[in-house]
Length: 358
Image (cartoon, rainbow, N blue to C red; front, side, top):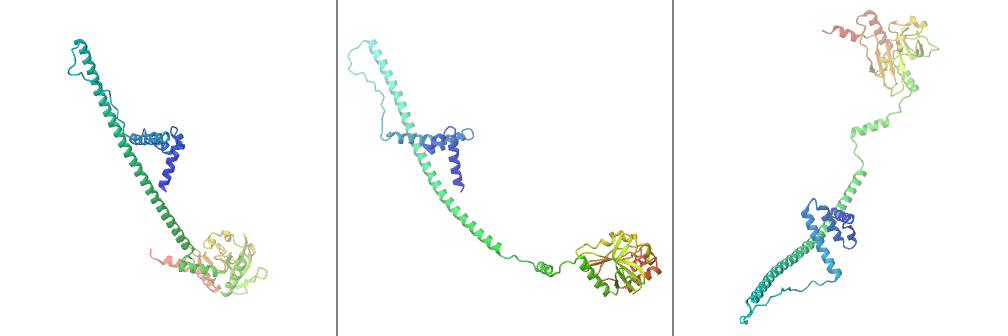
C-alpha cells in the first residue's frame, strides 16, 4: 500500500513540475527524473546528479528510437599523416629545405596532438558506454525490485484484509454474546423489579394509619376529636398556628407530638430538624392542652409508610434517627414522667452523658 502511494506521489510531482511536467505526456520517465533533479538540486546535489544522468539516458534512448539513428559498428577517425623526405632527395636549396623541414615538424606535432585527442575521445566514449550499461543494469535491477515489492505489497494487503475480516467476525461474535452480570447486580435488578411502586401521600397516610393502630393509638378526624377517648389519640388534619399538621398526638389528654406524612422517596433524615414551623405551637384554644409550652411538639415523626424517622426534642442533644414503628402511648407517657421528675437528665441518653467520667 505504501509503494502504491509513493508511485502515485512521484507521478503527481512530475506532472506539477514547471520545467518538466509537459514531458509527461511524451515519456513519463523524462518528467519523473527531471522533476527529481529539480527538487533535490539545492538540498541533495548527489541525488540531483544521478537524476540528471537518468534523464539524459532516457532522452538519448528516445532520440535514437524516434529518429531511427543507427548506433552499431566501429568508426575509426584518422588524422592527417604528413609525408617524410626521401633519403636520396636531390640537392635542394638550404633555405627551402629548412622551410620544408619546419613544415613537416608542424605536421608531426599536429598528428601527435590529433592522436592524443582521438585517444581521449575514445576513452570518453568507452566510459560513456560503460556508464550506460551500468545505468541500464541499475534500471533493470530497480524494476525487478519494484516488481518484487509490488508482489509483497499485494500479499500484505491480502493478509491485512484477512486479519480485518477475522477481527470483525470476532468482534461481532463478542458483541452478540450476552454480557455476564455479577450475582449481586442481578439480585439488585430482580429486587428493584419486584419492589412495588412508590407510595404517594394518600397511600402513605393509609399505611401510617395502620401503623398507628398497631401501636395502640386511636385515630380520629378533626371533626370528631376527643383527646380523652384513650391514652393515646392521633387527630388528623390538626390546625396549627402556622398551617396544618397531618397528625397531632395526645397522651393522657396532653398535646405531646406530631406526625408529618411524606410521599415515598422523600429524604427524611433532615426533615424533622429543619421543620421549624412546629415551634410556633398551636392555636389559643388548644394552648392549655400543651404538655410543654417551650416545646409544643416534643416528640416528632416523619413517615412515608415505608420509612419513618423520629426526633425527641426533650433530649438536650436531640438528633433524628430511623425507627421501624411508632412508639406506643405508654412508652411516651414514661418519657414524659421522667422528664417532669428529673429535669436535669430528662432522657436516658442525657443521664448517660452526665454520668460519664470526664
